[in-house]
Image (tube, rainbow over all chains, first blue to last red; front, side, top):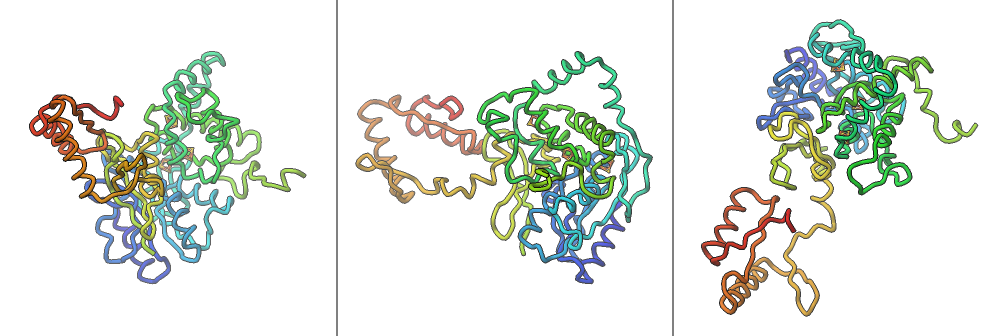
Length: 266
Length: 135
Ligand code: SF4
Ligand code: SF4
Ligand code: SF4
């Protein structure tokens, strides 16, 4: 399943179009992110399917930002699924990556993964591997929306109560790139205290992901308390879409919430 | 440019969570939990998430400290070990083996923890062995 990706990456590296390709590899018994720089050293490349399709995905765009900050003049390739491509598009609008310096290599997700993700578009615009799976709507959101407000609140509070405040949901998120994080702002969240105040901790994050979350699900997977964060952010994305007709990575241009400094004051 | 993601094990406690350290040009800049780590399955606690910060912290102790005239000062490992060994001998011969106690640590490997209790029991002759989590 990696032959076409390998071929494409080899071409890109040999032609000198990219300095390196950020993808996944199998090393020391683990699947993890890896920067491939040598066209003859692509043996260990994988797509992140250990036991189930896509169960070993990583926030490659986030790592790419780290590299690009130090090497802004170099061009890098990066492995993208549908969500990663939505991430790239959105990160460009926030000036976190330069589209002229990124060459995505796409893979389409199999149906099993699209189902698990309830993915609205389980493939990037262009891909060299895999086949288009069918889009899925968010059954998890529909399910919880079916409860009346009181039960919905109780149900979320029950989920949030398990939070151990590891900040993993923020730290793994490819769309969290702020230098100062509201989840560490004394006025909003009491830092240095456990357990976190609920629901404020989770709502602050949910609000901050509005117009940004590209629904990759990595936060949900990283949460040691199994809190269905993705469902919460899917709902937030639905609201933004209804109100502003904008969905990060699907719509063109900037988020309606992407208003900074003077523009916000006008 | 030299960018690596180095698989390793968390040193904070005994769980053995696996992660990758992001290393850019010789500096550790990030921690990424390993999805295939059997103990942590892609998750970490807040301490694990920040391993990359303490490794290179200027506040990290990298050499033994010995209190001399009331002040802690950096000394060589030889000096620290010689001092500890001679004081252990003095104290235990004056007050008995149970006047000494040994603190093991979750940050040590199983083998190191085994050694410290073995040393306490077989070399010094005390069962006073405890663990940093109870400090
Ligand atoms: S969110 Fe969509 S594109 Fe991303 S991994 Fe899931 S199915 Fe694939
Ligand atoms: S799904 Fe979670 S990790 Fe992914 S972009 Fe949204 S908030 Fe971030
Ligand atoms: S990952 Fe889960 S447990 Fe950790 S801070 Fe986020 S919601 Fe809380």
